[in-house]
Structure formats: C-alpha cells, structure tokens
Amino acid sequence: MSITKSLFGTMPDGTEVSLYTMAQEGMTVSITEYGARITKVLFDGVSIVCGFDTLEGYLADGDYHGSVVGRYANRIAHGCFTLHGKTYQLNNNEKGRYHLHGGNVGYSNRLWETVSAREEDGADLVTLKLRSPDGEEGYPGTLRILVTYMLKDHALTITYSAVSDADTVINLTNHAYFSLGGVGSTVLDQTLTLACDHYVPVDEKLIPFGDLADVTGTPFDFRTPKTIGQDIAADDPQIQVGGGYDHCFVRGGGAELSSPEWIGTISSPKTGIEMQILTTEGGIQMYTCNFMSAPNPFFGGIPQQKNEAVALECNRIPDSPNQKNFPSPVLKAGDEYSQTTVYAFKKL
Image (cartoon, rainbow, N blue to C red; front, top):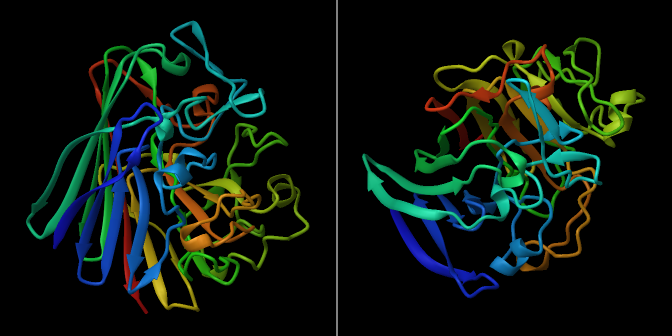
C-alpha cells in the first residue's frame, strides 16, 4: 500500500500537473489532476485501461479517456433544457447539434485541484476538487465537486459529491475505456453480463426517443453472459444507428440507490481477468469504441483501433433534463449530489 506523486507534465500556460499512483499487491492505479483522469490501471501485470504516456496525449485527446465528465455526462438534445420555466442554452459541442459530456470545455478539460492523497484503513485514496461557476457552458448555479478514488482489495471505488448554490442539472461519470485483454487487443471476445431489463432507444443523432425498451429478444439482452461481439453486427436498427453499441442500459427504471449494487460483469478469455461493476446509478452507458481511430497512439505506440475497448459509464439516463419519463437529474440548491461506482477485479 503506497501512493507516489510525480510530475506528469505542464499545461500550455506553464502550470504543473501532478500524477498520483496508488499501488497495492497485484494492482496499481494512476490518477492525474488534468480532467481528474484515470491514466493507467495495471492488474496482474496487464494494462487494462486505454491511455497515453504523457500529458500531451491527453491534451490532444478528444475522446475523454479516463476523465470525469460533466456537468452533464452524455447527450442533451439541442443543447437546451427548461428548469422552473426558464430555458437554458448550452454549448452544442457535438456537430453543432447537441451538447455532449459538458460542452466545449467540460470537466474532462479542466485542471482539478488535489485535496489529499492519503492512506487509510488499508486503502489508498486520492481526492480532487473542482469549482464550476454559474453560467459555465450555459449551466445555472455554481457547483462545487469532490471526487475520491479509492484503491483497496483490488477494487477501484469512485465517489462523487457536489453541491450547487442554485437549482441545476447534474450527471457525473468516469469515461475510462476498459480492455481486459490488455490495451491493443479487442473486446469482441469478452463476455459481458448486465443486470438491466431495459435499454434506451435513440435516433440517428443518438438522442433518446424518450422511452425504455425491453431487452428481451434483442441484441441488447445481456442478462445472461454473452460475448460483446455476438450481436454487435446484428441486423437491428438500433445497432446500425450506433455502429455497434452506444446505448444506455437501465436497471430498475433508472432509479438511484443509496448504496452501490451489482450492475454488470465483464471478463476476458485471453487474460482471465474479470471486472465486476457496482453502482448507485440506475443506468450504464455501453460504448464499444465503434469509431476509435484517433492518430495519437496509446502506451508505447499502440494504435487506436475499432472495438479495442469498451466504456461502461455508470450514470443517469441521457437527455433526462428533457425527458419526463426518465428520473429527474435536477439538483436543488444546497442539496448534495452523490454517486458511487466500484470496479472490482479478480483473476479467474
């Protein structure tokens, strides 16, 4: 059990950016202040999260690798929503048509401040904070956020908390891309199980229609284990619109829980590594890197390739500020937003 601090690089304005590496037997996790990102996860000697060797790789990245995204993760239709009778226009950073992952300068592109890096009760913990001012990217209310990464017993727990001084909407998550076969392999042969009876159908812009669909008899049924690749090319309109999976799967109608419960398991036949996911959230966005082809390579020059990894983002349902049928994402002034997600690893 140990935490080491090192210089990860410098921002264009010269500000130094730190990297914290938490190490326990058989597992290490590295976190940087830029975007509060997970930069690397090593388990049983295998690198299982896509990332870059240097800060410059993340500065050039447009795919949110390992970062905390917000104020609202995923998409908001037309970049606008109405709250208490007032319409708020956000920045439409995705093809000029909708708002994605917080806008032009979301939390993934902000430099977070370290609160503490400490060892406690057999765990390593790194806590970061961010102040998001009223009007940033169009959102109401000044939001103050804390994110804590905890490594203990081969489990990485991410705890989020936030308070706003005005009513606002919020949806925070981490955008790590997992490749349990090792970075540079494929996820098509990896076996996934999801405790989700429904998924969210989307239009050609990947905006929800506003309803939940039963997964029964569809390529979206992962209630019993199957490989990600089994139905990824199915003759299904929803598979075709996403170029694979880029959909939110929903547990219990999307209701949030007071403590994290199991929502999914993924494992690789190549390495025998299994990851269980527990969360307080009612939704999990699955993106199978259908368009991963950016020119900047991963660690050691590994090229980015389609279906090389999978994002499994525990969060609220996309576009819920505009969808009456989905649980409300409104955070009232003075109330505390909280979310906990656990990624627990073992060797089969």
